[in-house]
Each structure stands twice: as structure tokens, then as C-alpha cells.
Image (cartoon, one colour):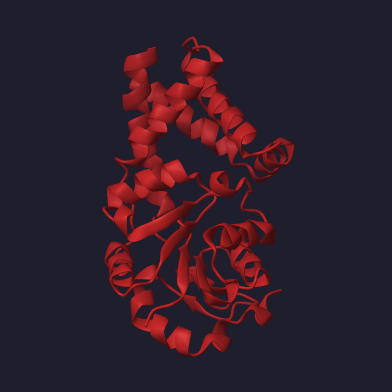
Length: 255
């Protein structure tokens, strides 16, 4: 009888982030060019340039540290994203409130059109759901974006809570994220299974008391990793064995 709650990261576990970039660039251009002017090609290039600068590790860390809370972070992020692209395209940016609403509308539309699931993942999610495993996300992305991606995959109905930082007002940058996530979900950390493609995130989950699996081709041989799989598609075949032998991935191995 399935009893563990399963928490899945999105990019790198359910979806291939490498496939998302080109789709986002095309869809950003299709959304903003008719509304704000400028050439579609300029919008695609602006989105690529802005995201490269935004995700530079030091810049991203400073952005997180300067945010008062998630709501403050999200508004600043959305405004900087759209205003930054407008400047690069050479069009006038709307007011702050209009920029924020447009950015949210764009994300809601784009996430529902992106197709980037890893092979076998949709089938794995449905199999886990059919066996009675409560499924949640555990992502650094907001719940609204996660809903769009999962709707595009046709598996939104398989999930309960879509945890991004917005639901618990905690960024995914330490064990606190998982502690608050488990508390909000009302689950015993010792009866949870977290899958992530980041060794650091897997270690945070273990420090919060959860069992964790590192996902990805590069996960084998990682220091401190007790269990890994190449793809989420492998999980349905092995999850019962993991439940029966939890010491294989106990929290005691966390660094």
C-alpha cells in the first residue's frame, strides 16, 4: 500500500530545461511583439540576453538576498524582466502595474504551450498517481508556472499541492524550504521522498528529514549521494523497494 508522499522538482527532473529556452524565446516574441511593438526577432534575442544576465549566479544570489519576501521578489523580477526586454527591443515600457500584469499573462500563456517533458516522465507520473502516491512539486518556480507546465503535460490532475516558493514564502535555498514545505503539506518528513537533479537540494531535503533521490545522468558518483536514478521514468519500477528498504536513502547520509 503506497504511503509515502512524493515531491518532484520540475526542471531537470520532470522537464528538460534545455528544451524550454528556445520555446520561451519564440513564445515571448509571439506574445509581446503584437502588444508592445518591435520585431519578433528582437524580442526573442532580448529574452535570451536578459535571462543570461539574470541567472548569472552572483546576480541571482544578490536578487534573492535583497528580497523582503516572495511577493516583493516576484514583482521586482517581473518588472525587471519586461522593462529590461523593452529597453533592449527599443520600445516604451508600460506603467509598472501594466508591466506586472502583462508579465503574468505572458507566463500563464507560455507555460501552457511549452512541451519539454523528459521521455517516460508523463507515464511515470500517471503510474505513481494510479498507485495512490500523493504527488506534490518541490520547485524553485512559482506554483502558477508549475500549473501551466503540468497542464501542458496533461498531468495536473495527478498532483496535489504545487510547491514553489510562493506557497510557503520561502526560497529554495536551504533546508528551511523543505521544513516549511512538509509542515504546510502536513506530512511526516520521514515518510516523504524528494527527487531533485541538484545534489545540494537533495542534501537539504535529507537534512529536513526526508528521503531523497538524485535524478540525472550526471548523478552517479556524486559525493554524499546514497541513491540516484538516471530518469524519473525509472521510479515506478523501484519505489516499492525503496519504501521497503528506506535505510538505503536515509537522512543520516546528508552532508
